[in-house]
Length: 311
Image (tube, rainbow, N blue to C red; front, side, top):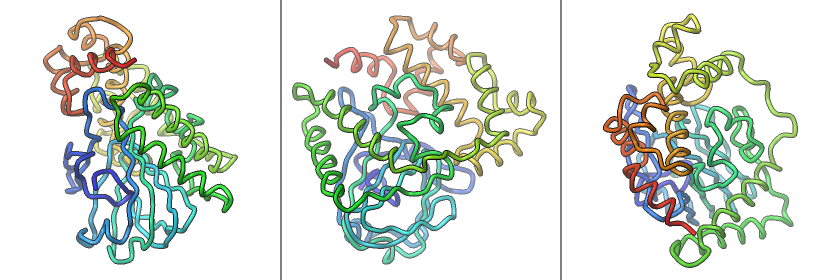
């Protein structure tokens, strides 16, 4: 069912991007030209996961928001068990490893799942991924955040929002579908953020140092080894620590930051690809095309054209 839940099996809406050294597959959101990068699915959790093997492990490189309409169950995120209860909203950031010890106990009930990349939300299109943990709209995705719980009287409204978003995405080419989907997804994220703890967790000092170094140097042809050396660590150690604390290794964060800037430049400028590559720390236009297609499943030229074709 693609992205469609925190313990999903990739399908029509997600495709395999890479496999980590420990064998964990990482899936990216399937990018379709002219279609918003967001997918909504309503599913019966028991039927949806009946075919999963025990211990199924995977990670996404996109964001996933899951609303439990009713039922119970559990799954694990980076080895920590999460219980599922009616009315809860679970946010799974990119890079975290999802696993299921017992598929039969995953969940028995109904739920909605929303998978999206920041390009689906106007307020996030130009935001650095290094700032995601601090962005108000993504408060429920912040490190250490607990699932939100929707009050009983508000649950029907959450289901209606999900249904409306699914309806707009069912025909993404009709007039106003992009704007309506963006508005509905933003509304969902606002509601989810209001369920997050009012006092955010204390930022991790090492993560902050790593992100500051990436932000200062990603436009240059730096590597993970360069960032680690600048901070006084070995690449292996820093990669392991960063994966444990953020769910993603060092190189992925560097790549994510570069790709965010690439998307911004493609969307907002007419600069040729070789100039975009030079200004984002990539070797040349050929390398940029390869990395972009690997990351999003589409060439940068087609992505730019699709963005310009939107109303």
